[in-house]
Length: 254
Image (tube, rainbow, N blue to C red; front, top):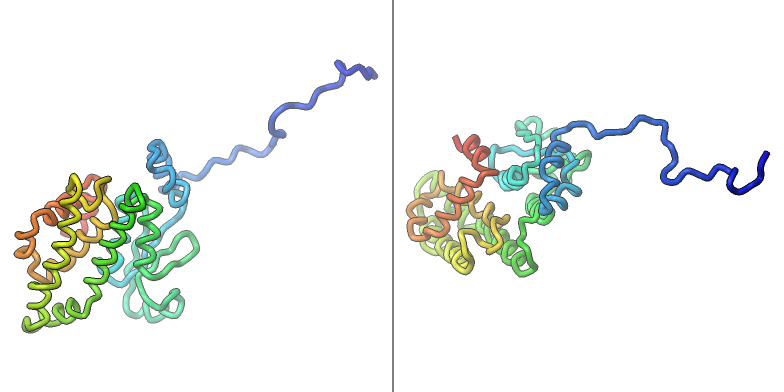
């Protein structure tokens, strides 16, 4: 046997041979979504973090607090399952929820509660908090205002009064609280090229404002109020007609 260096077989360069067949990811809706969107640099982050996960929303109402979560996932073209619980089912599952309330978001095999935290998580990873720290600060401030307005005592009591006979709380809502918030949001829109809250484009703040107005317009006469706030009315129209949201909104508003 030759011991010359030239006669000794050199090790093969590269990775070791793997006899197992090549593994291809299954053609799930999430994988198709990633294939479609990864070509755009803006979608790389959300593809890596969210594109291969399976999402399921669990709630008790068709809209309610879960609707903004649905809008965020729909905007990002991420498929999700949407389950509405009956009262009997909810009583059985209540003790298994993280904080004993709904809605919750299942991501793969993990369940997460508290809708405000879920919304911020999705907005952050979907790039819907603006392109800078200052834009993120504005978007989160408006989002917080919308959530505070929904949960305010005046709003709750005014809603109850609308079911019977409008009283002081309803008048305070229509003449003080709503005009105050609508003015704040209009100032943000007018400070940008428009038509959204942030100059860089649509954000979670715009979706939150649209969701608030769209849900409460059936109970509170917001159309009359929006006549004086044309920028907000135009913002809602742009969200409603957005190519990624128009089909979902039309299907669920009918």
